[in-house]
Image: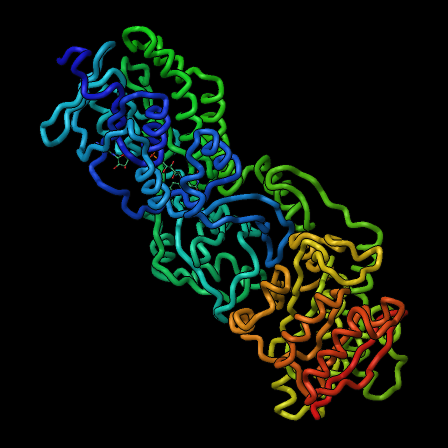
Length: 640
Ligand SMILES: Cc1cc2nc3c(=O)[nH]c(=O)nc-3n(C[C@H](O)[C@H](O)[C@H](O)COP(=O)(O)OP(=O)(O)OC[C@H]3O[C@@H](n4cnc5c(N)ncnc54)[C@H](O)[C@@H]3O)c2cc1C
């Protein structure tokens, strides 16, 4: 063996996967000379972890490596919890999606100067207290004081070192990776969704959907073996199998189809025994595998690298790296806690899906209740009891649905009192909805300035109610019936950061930032108020950025039936009216929510913007349609 003066490097890292590449970078930044050995010049596309959870991004940031990845990632701001065809909760989580091979290759490309990349397949390692000798398949030998084994699940080197694989669960789980798209080619209305099955008869843990590059990526985690015919069938016919296993998924995300080939990844759950070897330390999957459904593989890697980077300066301060030093790595309490948690979580997930005993039936119930009742965290029981108001609303909804057939029959023979909605709150919306349903005005509902979504949800409900009412009459011509069947979309345009800055006159409640409501809160509210998100298109951002031709083309926005303008200021109303100019038609209803603000002055606010718009567009005329409350006025559009 070579003497210590002639060693090839202080540290040899075997394997340039995520564990190896992060370890090499962090150790080199501590001033160590590192050789990173891998048989491939770049990581091949592999189906592995594709998303950094918030804690993982934080750990990677602490290691000083997150900044290299960020420009290549897709940022996810919130995750919907999906169950039984609906969204039960929106979790504000900052995640980053990226293909595994991209992650590894970006980090390889940004390796610091102290890292020497060596192409080669390590065939044998001779270890000792002072010197480690690594032999490559080419016959070349490399020497170092420390070897970091990060060779993933390829364990033949571990075998030759006399380590023993302690298999905790053979065929722990299988994961499927693929991308989906909506059949109507529209974008999905979320960044990410974690969708849970209502029963575990298919052995599905959950489906994770998340934006990645320009796609909607799907990771499905299932507790089955690779030889299970179900698995083969899924790879062959993913659309049918998904439809069968998660039948109500399309109610939440819209009709979809799988657009890429289905990749699979199976894991045995194991940990290495006999790890106390002089001069060698195992990190990442080389030491212990994580079940993909727990999403803890990266957490383990970053913890290993962090702990190793603490140990190495101390180890190198004195001669030799015997088992005493090595033990300080494996005995580190943070590492032990992370490894133990990864195993516990894997076992928990498996039991929840597979175990039919009473205890686990109870656990399942505990997890399902919050999902059923629209609140709660993933694994903690937090029952959301509906408020009195919600109970009254639900009861009213049920009763009115039960009475509906009788009402419809009775209406053909009797004159029933009009709905309160025609003159009560949001009467402008009810009347507009009735008008467009009865006059066959085609187009979508557009609302500018949605705030917390109350009027948006009221419009949605009114439109559906009036369409249903209209279609219950038997005099529908085929074209009218067809019109009523076409899907009407509701567009929400809002900055979600409140009113913009601007030079014009303002009321005291029109300060910049006033009426801000986050997009997630808006979505949560409208879902609570009964809006089906598959009919909703949210266009977030200030109007100077969003009200343009690109938005129209992206959403195939061609015609507006009802336009609700509730953006208060002259400066905001101007771009709105410009945007709708080619969308309005004979009979389109324009509702100005704040027409009479600024003491009703025609020189300010929505009135001024509208007057100037009409002057620029003499082919349009507005006919007064409905007044509501002290400030709202609706018009219908006449084409001259
Ligand atoms: C399907 C699937 C989905 C997953 N999803 C998630 C997830 O969502 N979140 C999460 O946190 N984790 C997830 N994981 C776990 C995570 O991907 C792994 O923990 C992680 O990839 C392991 O990285 P590693 O560097 O230890 O091993 P690897 O990425 O396997 O790297 C090992 C490297 O060693 C090299 N090598 C092997 N043998 C030799 C040799 N003899 N000589 C030289 N080089 C060698 C290989 O070429 C390779 O580059 C998932 C895993 C799978 C399988």
